[in-house]
Length: 408
Ligand SMILES: [Zn+2]
Image (cartoon, rainbow, N blue to C red; front, side):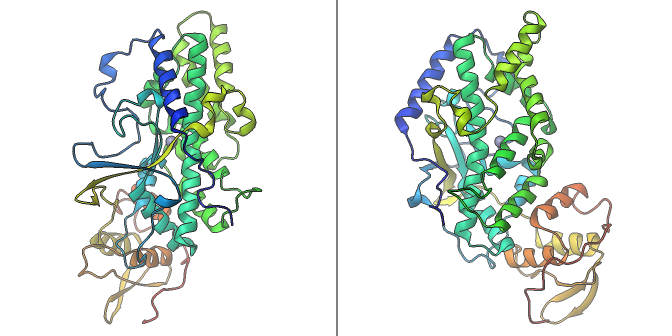
């Protein structure tokens, strides 16, 4: 087995601050007066898709990603189900991690830092879900998840760095106008996310240095496939069309400046910075190299506990809406719990009504008996407007797993 978190390089704080200084210098020389009304909250770095608490609500905790800071999981099956897969299905990969540009180093969150931020509590919750779904260890799941997220976010850095290099030589802004344009577009036009997810999945393919269990790759592939808008495009093996559309977005700012041939020239210059591979890295100045992008865990705590709220479904929703309505469940018998026979003939145990939250074990048992994965459950939840439209489901799916519960 490879070294855990082996894809994430050791930190180089000096290199990171050099990049931030250079960016400040380059940006101050550009002819880009940002329209103030487009940045109403100019103190925070703007990025659509990133859903995090404001610094006033809690204390920010930022740690470097290394072997000493690897989170551990607690008893998985009995713990409350935190639904991190649901957060990704609704919001995209930025639910779990985000890239903060070196251009925004002075802004919150993580003031004076920039780079890749893995949101600890949600990553632990997703790795727990992955571990229960795949039967692989929590440590292996978290390791693979970190490699996936690191590579996804590294793609955002790669493009940002390429833009800085273009700006330093061309004198015209590229990155900020591009980000402003994308922020105003719907999620299915966030083409950069499709390419980032493609590289994220690619990082989990067997290589000379890294080997991840197949079941873990399949889980993350399914998560990407059920993600919103352009995020789902990451399962496509060919990203040529997405790259073309992204290059168009990044060069759109030049649409009205100069002859159309210029735009073609700029578009092709932009394209040279759109691949994420070591051979392509040569096109970046060595001080912008990929290994210089810092990686952190981040959390927001109050009284020693994370303030991030789980993306959870309630016991009542699963019993009354998912089982009885979506799966057309019919009461079967009652012993210590109520049992329902669902559309595919399987018998499922209703979650314990005396507990406030659903446990991981209950969630996985019910969803597996319904023939679904966690991401598929959350995707259907969106499609049916929380089990109200297009129910009961068609077609019916056969169960994916045997019952965990032997007491029937
Ligand atoms: Zn992203």
